[in-house]
Length: 456
Image (cartoon, helix red, strand yellow):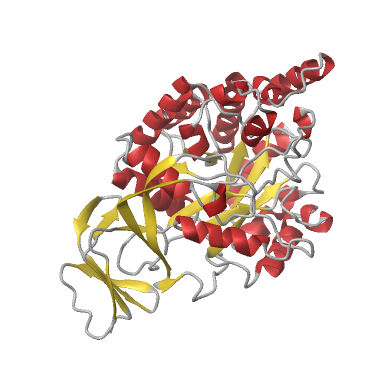
């Protein structure tokens, strides 16, 4: 007998939307169909609402808890839940609170991460380990890391901890041979570093010069190089936070050749433009110091087309819970000293529904595919991402008729600002269920994952 029956709603899948009831037993979806009899089960009348699969946010930098911040991992996981995200994957790159010992080795980093997050998340979660040029031999540890349930990992082409090109390609090849996939931050330091040096030498240190020293050409060139490496390595490639039309064209070319290249973008690149960098208030500009930076309206329009046409596969928040009183440091220091990032784990679904579906840029079913179905498929989460019999009952009851204004004071993340302050959005989560239970009633689990070759 079912534990819970949701009635009266419109069930949304990547294949279509239909009026149907959903029965849940022991945390899994048992039946989907019209007029299901609750027969003693808990009954949830959801007339007028949409039932969406819980969002899977595969790109976050949720910080680990410590003595000074004993609740920040927990709080950001609760923020995710409030926004409709029921599973998130996070990185353990420098700045997320991982110890020096944990940062020195992917396997030690995994062990530390699991120990410090056990029982601390309100939703299900997992790790995408970071491969760093500061580690002794990260590639040697990849097979064991994959076997331990972490088959996706990230490498950077920029910053002082980037992987050299030859190691990057070797990481792709090694990952592919053992059932893993590399995620790559694509920006070309050969273009960016001289521009930064010139700006500093000429005294151009204000926040806006962060964007001016990271042009679209640097992102496109690095994206092209990463794709070429993956082709030689015969490996899948996942390009993170793609922001511009030029990089999008590189991904489109690779897909047209049938190569296993996947790419994500983020809500901020779909909502804002680089016009915000002209604001005379440095306290506002610093909130948008991110890498890659915001781009032009032409780029924004191209990204929406890329989402609609299947060139982009996923939308992730790239959540970084920076604070203006610590990491962002207002008044602003010279731009290279500013932490690159901003919060977004709680606003991902709201912004995508409002800016995409409500404005007619994206179909509802395609949004579900981008936020739930594709993340589950590409990142080894076969029980997540869809409203299907046998899947986890991670569900969002969504009120499409509601409207609200995003305000920092109403959000739950550990940052002290939101880049979406004052944004009017359509739709809101009415209720969020993790494995059929209200968030907070059960503990979030660490997800050990395996990638399926046929999915890549």
